Length: 387
Length: 243
Image 1 (cartoon, each protein chain N blue to C red):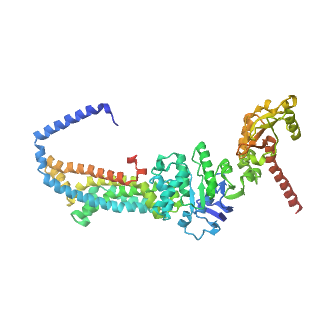
Image 2 (cartoon, rainbow over the protein chains, first blue to last red):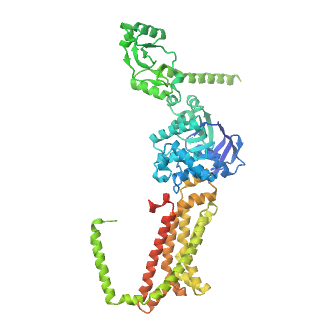
Image 3 (tube, one colour):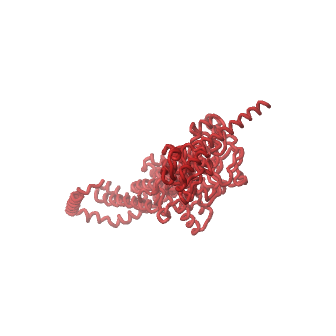
């Protein structure tokens, strides 16, 4: 857990003092990623760098796991905080192994232990230790270097990590891949991470919480979903973008909007039965056809069921696409647009039909949180007036 | 540049040249005259090397730490002024420095070493200083952020990454040094200058060459030695010679 308490930084410049960070207070809960986000010059990087005192704070405190770091020696403090910077900062005079072992060696680990650790970490980011241990940084691609930069910060297993736009210098395709890898790693490692970014999409993807900064002040500190659904003011709203509802698609899983206990038909059911089910559930288009293992294999259209006699197995169409229960809505929306459909059958991890997701369900889910907010906002407004 | 097609031609020309010079040298009996000085050459070369080793070594021992100290953030404001002072050592003709040092240190080896050290100090300090300053800021930030003490940062990150530039300074300084040592003879410091200057005075070209050729060879040798040191000592990851 990182707790920041009234942290302030005032730079003395030739044109008078500049407040880079103005009484910032926030808390990053254990095992979460908090992304500090904002336009350049907003104080996010200053705030991050005050945690490990690369920028010495003018006033305020930083607590790590509840312990005040003010009295701690700077070197000791930094050794228990992983630090990743945008320029990566691998030492070109050292091999990859030496780079990864820097902190363990500073901490006095014995040789066998830090060597094993370097091997283990390279394995974790899928770089073959037998090849990469003895390489020099300049022999690696940018993406490989950044992976090494991240595992170097992880080497001594610090509880807390600071990352300053760590994936900023990587091309978009590799950035996505490294982000995914990093999230997968984080799922197991559960570090408490502060992460500076200027990219709202990256923030939404990586963060458990997002802190929006503007001119040295913390404007809003919230979960990504809340931030996108309820930006606190015009600045945040414009910063998260006009398409903020679309950005939320990424945050919502199919499981959250699925229409459960959706009916389905089997090969042997009559078309009449299918039609009756559609009537009952108000389906205007089609119903899913499943096989013996409950896997969706096709659909029976309402028009066919209404006008034709026979069995479902004789009059069904193949499925164009299915959604997985763990998929995010962005993928679902994309599938729907691709296949010109307003609904998709959903499967669980065993491939069985568990329900369906409809365009209406999605818009309803996203809309519901907006309505809830405007209702409470209205209430607050009334309450404020009453006072 | 390398042109494989011209290589045989070039070799042939070289062979002809060597042959012709051999003929000329032999006809004028120059070699025998040259070898007449062999005892002097050996003795004076020893003196010459002694002067180079002592003055060059002193310049390195003083210059590198000075460059390192001047690059520290706390004294960096002094750096440019200090450079200007050292620059005087290079601007003033070496002969003048030698004359000056003779005037208060007397004649002999001591004033020679003193003057030579002063003259070769600047490139070493300058390159040590700039080399360290040019270590990218993000490397220093990474080193500090990882929790290195300033001394660890200097020894493990800054110096290894500046070493190549530092060696370049030492190389320049020693090249100047070897070439300047003959002047030491003028204030009684000895060295191959004795043959060169006496040869000039007595109008004996062979005697002059007996001093000049070993000096030139020595310069090349020292340069090669420094290059080999750089090749061995500068870490592989930042060594342009080992790419």
